Image 1 (cartoon, rainbow, N blue to C red):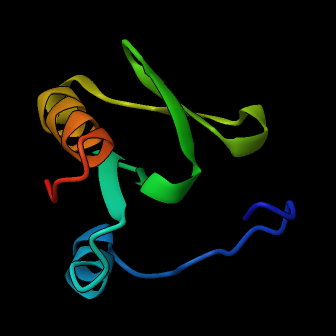
Image 2 (tube, rainbow, N blue to C red):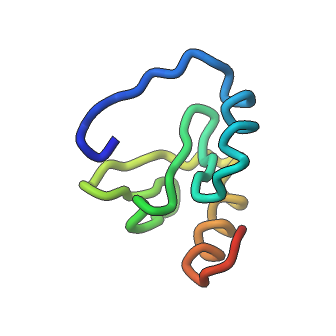
Length: 79
């Protein structure tokens, strides 16, 4: 979280994905990571840079979809 708090979730990410599907501001970018578009400040080849400088990895398997969604979000589209 932006205040440094950590929330641990003990469920499968596929289950979490179903719940987060209602919130289009979240993007899965790695087997173990999600990013909130409102906190992404930049995208580099293999990571997102978030508010405060935190870096979240983008795996090869999610890179194409993450890139498309990131640029669609910049254009104000859902993606």
